[in-house]
Each structure stands twice: as C-alpha cells, then as structure tokens.
Length: 250
Image (cartoon, rainbow, N blue to C red; front, side, top):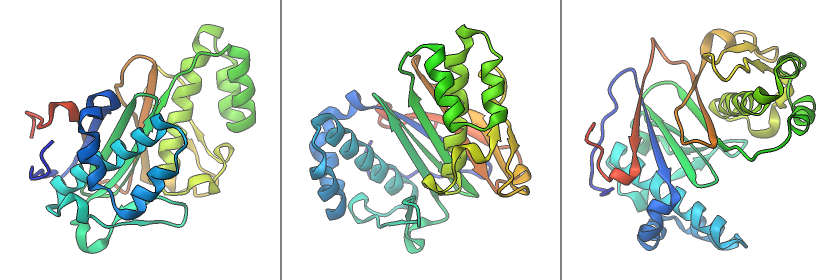
C-alpha cells in the first residue's frame, strides 16, 4: 500500500484489514524503515527470525494504515501506550481514529474506527484433544462457559473453545485491560455457529449494554472476533485485504 493513500471512515463503519505475513516479506526492508527507534529496538530483541519479521511487518503495516487514515507520514506517527500496554495514536495526530491489531501464526488483523473503541483478536487453531481443551477451559474460562463447552459433543469442543477465547480476548482488548482482568471474571457465548453475545460482566454490569461482539471471517484454521464499545447504532464492518495494496472498495 502506498503511504500517500488517503482513506476515510464513514460514520458507522469499522474497517478490518487482513494481512498474510508471506505477502509482506518482499516489503520487509521498506516496512522496517517506517518503525520508530523504540520499535526497531524491540524488533532486535526477538531471538526468532520469524517473530522478528512478523513484529516488523505488523508494526510497519500498522503505520502505513494509520498514515492513510490520519494523513501523517508513517514514520512520524507517534504511539502512546495505556496502563496495560494498549497502543494508541497521540491525540494531536489521531483525528478521532481508534485502532487495534492482532496477529497469530501467518495472519494479522487491523481494526480501525472513527467512533467508540475497538478490540480485535485472531488465533491460530492448533489441534489438540477435546480433553486438553476442556482442561484449559476449566482453568481459564468462567464456570458458565466451561459448562457450556463441556456439554458439547467432542467434535465441537475445539471450535467452541476458540470461539470463546477470541471473543473474550476481543472484549479485554476493547477496554485495554490486558491481564488485569482474568478471563474467568466475565462470560461470553461459546457456540461457534451462533452470533456471539456478552452474557455476564460482574466487574462492570453496565457494560452489557455498551459492548458488543462479532465473529469475523478468516482463513481455515483460524478464529477471530471483534468487540466494539460505545458505538452508536449498528456498525458496518468492512473487510479489506492489505495484499491488494489499494482496495477497490476505497
């Protein structure tokens, strides 16, 4: 994507950009040049070449996108970090743009909105036995969620586990809570074939009316979800593919 591209988010829209890391490898050098000094230092700390490359690509593409939406040069975008590490554009550069990103395995997602807050999560599904997934669910999820997954047939446990996991991660990320809110302290629906719902938030009961969840279409072998907070009306979630360089939908 050319960094001179200008993109506008219309009222009611959420833009979700997808990226396959392999598509960006030819651009690795130019993407690295977009990183801040701090990001370059962080990239250099990775022991694994794969992890270093994915971090560099994810941050470089993020800067390209933020440049396209805010009008500021990608290299000059200033990011600040919340109490639990959530990145945001400085107020002077943001132009009301809020964003969130997630990557796992070979894929990354970037969500941008002009109103409210957004959280997004993608997870690569690594096959394991239903018994293993149930042990993890008992350890990390709420009793309500564990019971719901435990009651499913063995063939459904894996998808239900990751539907629950990504929905919960998106919820935590929309609030920028990091690890400060245990996954067991709130509940979401777990049925992967049904629209996701936020079911219980004892830590903040009013949030049931303020935060909503959606599943996202992603490649086979992955699950993804997005959460929106303080968003007026029903959003239009528009998907874009970074590999197209310039989406025909823009």
